Length: 300
Ligand SMILES: Nc1ncnc2c1ncn2[C@@H]1O[C@H](COP(=O)(O)OP(=O)(O)OP(=O)(O)O)[C@@H](O)[C@H]1O
Image (tube, rainbow, N blue to C red):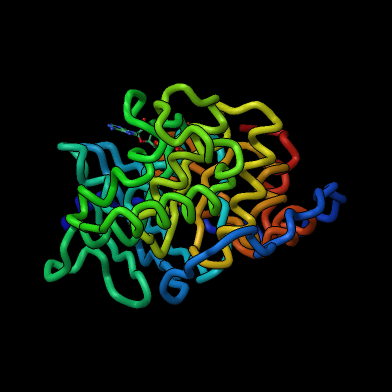
């Protein structure tokens, strides 16, 4: 990883206290029991970014971002458009390097081990750290059943029929979709509603047993009811997979996350983290007035 030298220094956060009340909605209960047979995955894993900077060609888009995303928690990345949240998320599972002009510096540690270590395989990092995108992207002509299993082929895993059936049920159950589709598993994924397609994508991600799930505005294309279902799914999943979510919806960040990081890119400077901490504190008593302005919708 190479870093162009550009002499940029991130502005220091202001210590001005902020006291206005913010109506934080009640959080979705975490780790509620799932109905059905659930096979637990491996131990929970934490993710840590250390001094991550990113570029697209000469465009410096992230500057020295450090953040701990704790095991078994939902961390929400918030901030105005263009401040580098999606870029940061894509760095967390080595997708950033798919862009030909992209460069980065820093470390991303999964359980203390750098996923960018040259001795570690790229496919292993992507298997352990799954991604759900803004727009649901199931394979539209492929059956619901085969969509769930699609990642297995990519990772070279082979299973017998019974093991596949069990895995499909388990993942659809965890994604909150099983009851709606159990009688039509052979129908195409493209025939589902947008919200159902997004849950199918979550089920597909879970089938390869990730230790971290990255979600890039997973509800932005969905109606409020589907959004609520996905949020409940997130609350259940976090008992077994660490989640990092980018959202523009402050109510959603408050509902689903235990911790928040506020990103900002001011006046054509690269994005950086102004402030991060427990979600309740970020919304009710942020340390920096820019955080307060953002979470109260005064800009962005
Ligand atoms: N593939 C790319 N090639 C070149 N520049 C890019 C690319 N992807 C993102 N950028 C630039 O990087 C900066 C950060 O973009 P990014 O999408 O990470 O921000 P964001 O905070 O996620 O924005 P939004 O909330 O609108 O999705 C922007 O200036 C954007 O134009």
